[in-house]
Image (tube, each protein chain N blue to C red):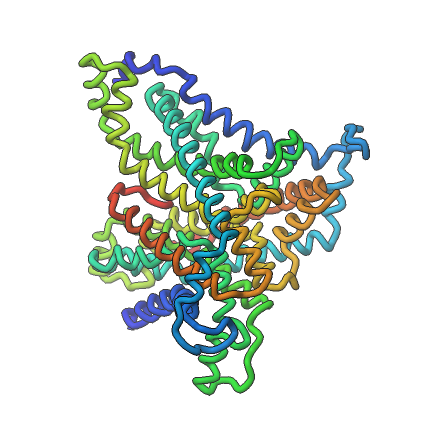
Length: 285
Length: 255
């Protein structure tokens, strides 16, 4: 029973957070949506509604940029899932003494400024860097390979940075799993792949889905990694947005492109969500 | 067979995570700057790090922003949870905050920058704190609320029935019960704000340089072993914070 005595806690206590959220979250988002369809004269007067800015970004060039960002996000999330699931499984099933140590090792880089990791990968991937030296030492290559400023460097950095975002949700869904279900399945003659498909995966689906979108969504708008590791050769949504929004007169274009690409992202998330459900049904069957 | 594969995957992932860090740390003690190979041991770069005034100014800015954003989001977040949970109309207001973690940070940054420009707030530490508080609320509300729900309601009721005022009950019963979870949340929000790059990149303006922005400018201007030394210092710092986080045993999940 909820006691009546507590109900006179004033609503004003909750107000600061709600006001903060409305003013600094919903209002700015509403503002960029509205400003992307407003026609504004050079003197700053609103002259009506126009879809010109939106249509500008529906040209093949910009759709291509959105497409490559979607592809980048999808490949990053898929790679992180393929690498992350076994790691989460290992973390969850390892003996408890080492468990916190391995978790610790996983979280420390995650809690350290990510630009330093970009910097660290410069060291590894440079022409005279660690990887080239190692490969030459092992006699695999004669000439150093240019690893930096390539799609490869972008992908390595993306997976490196986003991996914990995938591992941790899967790990916590594995922690909540009743271990006896796995034992029962194996004892009763279920094969490993059968147990994985019918028990492990369905019961950790919430973690998988959570991790997948925790990686997928920010990867889509990532701009620092493509710029620093890819040398700006390939254009992604994040780089275009930051270019426009920080430009002299192009702020409203940046806002409009943000809106267009957010809509694309939203559609892709819905499609992926349905797709994951469909795949799960197939896997279970 | 399964066992060997598993070990192989795990070992290579941890190598993947730590080889860059170890290489980075080793070269912070190299007498010659990159890309020279190993020449000899020196503390020189750490000395230079100590004397780099720009860097410490940026460090201080990051610290101010992180502390302000953490305290602000924690205080107003907990007040809302306190109201919402006791008032019975819980989900209504708390679901307002779920978007903060779902939308890409770049989108939030663009929206805030446009908004600040519209209402002509000069960019600087204030706008950084405002933006980071929005991000912080996205963590504080769900994390603290999850812990709040686990509190035995009979404890607060007993306190109220025995004559304590709601405020006394809050400070003497509820808050102490929430403490480990709140400290864990605060640590997480602090480190996220302190390391934040995307929001800071957009809303810092040209005057307030945070540590991330300082590191970015160093990355763009060419590599220097001072950054290696800085990495070492920051790694020690974050290891310490992770240890504190673990030792709280607050059962707070990061995700």
